Length: 250
Ligand code: PGA
Image (tube, rainbow, N blue to C red; front, side, top):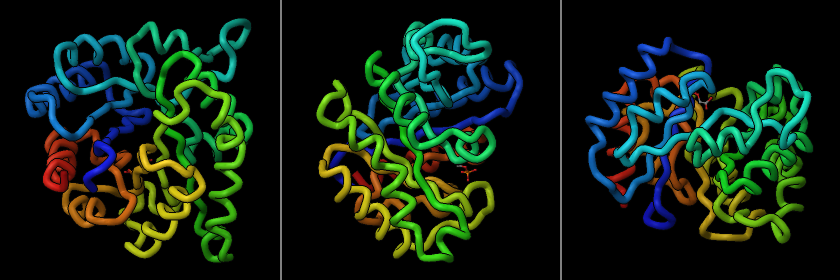
């Protein structure tokens, strides 16, 4: 894992209070006090973005959001546009997380529109892809990933900033379960994504039960350029320990 620059993102999901978001940000800022060869970002709930931004000011930890509207503005109650995220100082946004694909029926096409909306405002999308357990058991993993990538790849030549996107492979059955995909499974899918995207500079993260004690092994794998961390990103020591494992590999 020497090129491109490793990236570790913490997906806070719908956890915590404002006081906890501030305390977690402060702990991260204190423990990650220098610009380093590893890039770190946190993705708090929308409502905590302003207070987290304030705490992280002057640090080297970047800010991102967990989703974005496909629309630039208008009568879309409850939605948040890419320009609003840009106003809040977000450099990154997750699109296509499996929880949103499953619970909110976000389609591959919707996710591509979100991806495009983010890029157009200079926000780097972190595109999540991954198969369910039944899709893996049926031998359809790469087919599912190819389908998830197809509408995104169609944007490649005409979307400014496309190559600064990040792809996160998150097998659904590994999210929040404590079960990590095997080395062979991860390397197979990451190599496939690398080949589909056709560019070495796009970072490919692994996500799904990443913890401080399995990070070193993950970061030793081919085409693994960092991690998308859920549960362990809510504990400052854990998240920093994961980032330090990535730093050791640089
Ligand atoms: P987890 O979540 O690390 O808790 O498995 C990962 C994610 O959903 O992004």
